Length: 265
Image 1 (cartoon, one colour):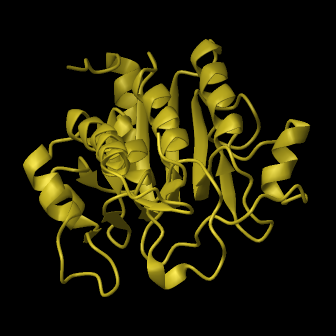
Image 2 (cartoon, helix red, strand yellow):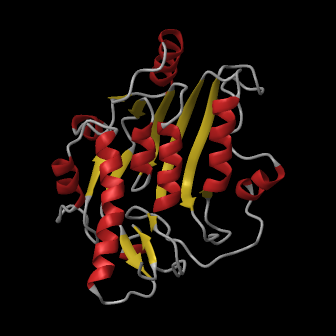
């Protein structure tokens, strides 16, 4: 495996040095990873004291609703801590929450709220795989943006929604840091890309050919390769189930609670 960082942060936002290692993705215009920092970071550090964001049930006080709300915001942090000015979602906080949701008999469904610029590939896929494998109904809403590795997380839910003004960026992963100029480097990147593509295709209505076409499109982004889908475009491409917000997502979850979780292929 070659040394370096796999991510989707565009060249236009490279003013912060990249993390030295760990596969990551992020969209055009999103803040790139930077060197590690042990400084407290508000919401992210609060989770270490047992008060992680997104741990409330829908409706206010803990336990007042059978629907648990999970937020995925900012940049998805992987094995390297990001600078204190970056708003992040830490995978080591989200994964235990998902396990707790699955085991809690009082929680009947989970609602995932997404407004993320992307982040670490393997951390994002880990979150997506756990959501995908839950026995309880799940729904996701893309708010603002669900870019790069945020796409697999959005499509991992049983029902996916996107508000009309939200966007989703589809583009290739990339490698920063030290790059060894050998064929194995490209093979590694290609295998990493395949993992993302196969997950998205398996859990949405888009075909692999169309997804790759959008991923490698040129001419749409000024300083990057890829495609930006706005609201209804994501639904038209088969990536997201429907345009809608809180009311539609909550209605779908209540219906799944009443009828049972839909079967997966």
